[in-house]
Image 1 (cartoon, rainbow, N blue to C red):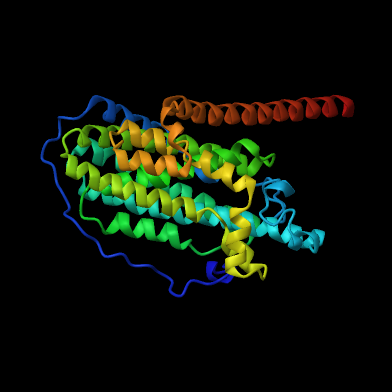
Image 2 (cartoon, rainbow, N blue to C red):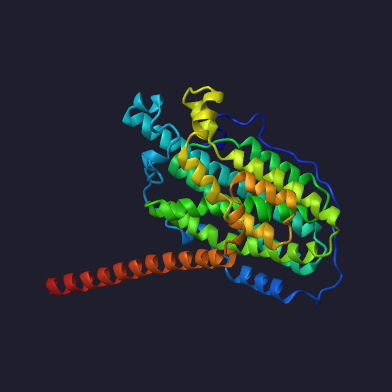
Length: 369
């Protein structure tokens, strides 16, 4: 079945073309490189994995409750619309919300793949080109995995959200080589990591938990890459150049904050757009969710040296200024540890099952004799 047949609203065209800007840069220096970045490149090579085998795709998923979503986090909960809904309607709503969330993850990962390829093309330093080549492969794997989950387990997709599309468009059209780093590595990846983490840590469903944990293990390296490269580069920029990038961050953060309402889902349930926006804004869970979503972005922006007065005021307005002191390194370490622990638990259980199977076969053989 074509993906087009699974969209709630089919895209008007099968492809989206963004005009390329900026120069492709070659480096003839093959020996020099930053030790930290080359170490990250080595880690990127060592940590490659196959989504077809590392993830247990045989696990069952209920498409009408793929994440174990509690009623209270659904935007319609407690409204006049909720009172009229049957259990089937509520299952449909969960399916749509999960489809909407994972569809945006999927579209974002394709965007990350294209941005990583753009970095390979445009960044002047060979060590950064090397690492970004590994990230391009990582993002391809993530898009493959999210696409498979949506096609095989949920059976429904949503088109790319307009605000996510707008930020990707701004990121890719900019001719400055650092902008794909800033738009993708810091803003989109940072937001995605927080969203992935919230679902990973709250879902009781093993397949989405595996997917999110393993993707986050990769993404922790990607954010580290952006921090290293941009921190070094932004030390060299003038105040005017830094302000330009802070304006980009401010606009991007407002876009991403407003992207998170899931209004498209409510519209598909017959609720007018304006009412859907109002219902979403009234959701206590959404307000908490928004704040937590910036837990990865704000400390990263501060760390790379973008912390001017206008940016700080924007974060105060969003209610996320205090997140600037979050320990980003600790969060990334936890992402690594959670993925490794999942691996250990899963493979220990599989090994025990094999031992039990062999023991049972021996016992049956002995009884037969």
